[in-house]
Image (cartoon, rainbow, N blue to C red; front, side, top):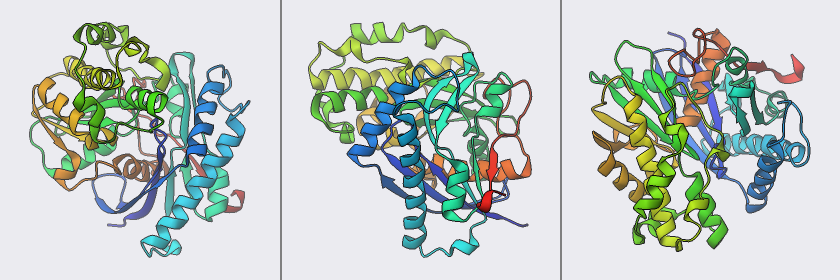
Length: 370
């Protein structure tokens, strides 16, 4: 069996930095998880990305780069190239042994109901910088065919669950800036959709009130008290009643409702909101999973993990406890999706994005513009 040696890159809606992961895979059942690393953005980088998010609100053309979008795209491309170079050096990996890069870019706008999704990051430029093949622009083909364009990771979740030999249905929950759920059952296509806000609202709260990027270890939320009335108000958002497929833009939810609360109570309420939103998502599953496996930044928040254990109807565990990586899973997934892109294998399905049929996606860039 011939395995492709691929590096995946992910800069998620938390906008904290670049995750890098090296895997070997055939893009189907065979997956060997190798090294992973994380390369943080600077405060200036994150400020530029926030300006880009603001300027993207009025986009009508996904390829337009008004205002901060053009310098942000250049920065994202440069930081990803630097991350790969540093990763190869740190892991003592010979560049010539790498077959392919999977590059997600940075989502700045996601409005599939308007046929629009925009990720900044120059995939062709990255291929030229690194002198390696780069697969990129994974979401557009699905949105063009009427799909949600998200989530994309479920096909990788399915492969991991199959390799682990799970006999009963499991939910794999990624909690980045947005939370999404993959429902995986043996020998069936995954069912997946965005569940609600992940870390974004708490991150924004901490940044606005303290200047810190996150509620590290859920410390503020642990000291606070959940305002149940406000939590009920937040959960009244129409998104939770929508049947899947469904997906979110980072700005679809607001933390304005907790503005009158002190920091700790506001953090506690928004953390409970994330957990309760995921619990609501379980109402849309065909059956109740026996296990919820948590990945993404949320897996590092003990307060959020405790809220999930209280609110979900099954056992909750971190992806790390299965020999996976809670931190690197999305980067690993984009390495896997890159291989599927090259092979023309589907990355989205009617049960994950609402696409009319299983669809491949992505664009392949090669050095020297080939």
